[in-house]
Image (cartoon, rainbow, N blue to C red; front, side, top):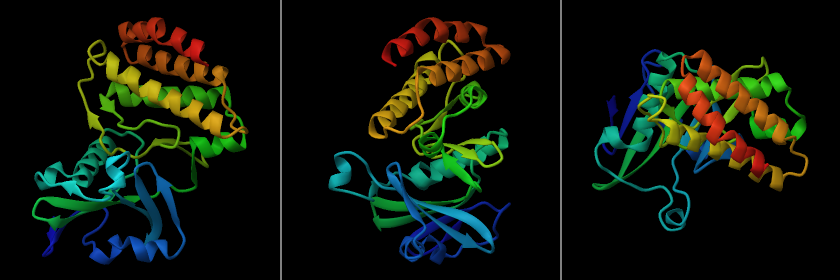
Length: 262
């Protein structure tokens, strides 16, 4: 960790030996035009030493965001949003899960009790969000099934995604799948029966986001058939991982409800 008068920077020593504060300058990166909205935060794409990177700033959503956009209550450096997401991405990468590798995080003290921050990650090359792909073309049944298997793999390791929606699933040009945006996420108890509620909640959140995008974009290639294939892929993956009891619970309690909604 590197300390400055009013900020601290956490770096990934496997990727960088130092990270100057200028690389966290959102304004200069945005001036180049490579930016996009991303959930509660805003991201910009830039290059550092020929490496494509993503800079994510943390911003509040909902009603609080109308009054306090970037400031958070400080309760220790390890409890800051960017430190926690950095640590979680490190842990997920060690587990072999497909996530972007964290490069650096910065916490800037606004007052003795408040902070703002940013996170720099590796960019997933030649990738599009699930929403962007579905807006262009339908997915094959195999692709829907692989998305279900991807989510099952994360759940098997006890990974709760704080905002599992269709914009946080990436499909790369070579067909690889990734999950992104792990703000307010965590590794929880992976015991199948005890974890039923939060894992089902993750799936509900993804399904609701797909329905929302389908209402907003008439051209979105999403229907009940795709969702059912996704769920079948998810359930079969859980069974393959030895979690037959959990898979049966999801099949009995979850699948009929989804069919009724779609």
